[in-house]
Length: 159
Image (cartoon, rainbow, N blue to C red; front, top):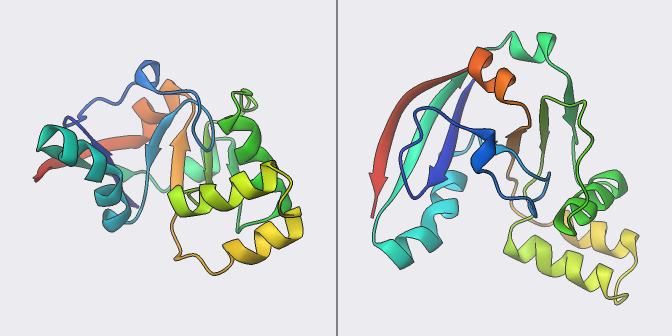
C-alpha cells in the first residue's frame, strides 16, 4: 500500500519522537493513502514557509497481519470518543502499533466542538459527519512498526 505524509521537510526516516500529542489518535507518525489529503496537510506550511514536502512510502501488506492495529471503519461513537479524548490530551492505548480511521479535519473538528460544548448530541454529531468527504489516516504509534514495515520511496516539493 502506498502512503503519503505532508510536512515542512522531506521525511526519509520517520521518527515517533517528533510527533505532537493533541492529534486525532494522539502522538504518532501520520500518513494517508490519499495524496490529496497529504497535500491538504501541507497547505498551512506552504502559506507560512512557501514550501512543503509530500513524502511517499510503501507499507508492507504483511504489516496488518503482524502488527496490533486498531481500525475505526467509519464515523462512530467509539471513533468520536477516541478522537475527543486524544485531542484533549489523553494518551491513546499503548498496545497498538497502528491506529487508522477518518481524519478529523477542521470542518469535522468544528462539529466535534459543537458536541463538546453540548450543542449537539453524539448521534447528531455523527449524523453531520456522514456528509463529509471521505478521508483516511494511518497513525504509526511505535517506531519499530515503522522501521520494519514502512519503506521511504521519495519526497516531492509542494509550493
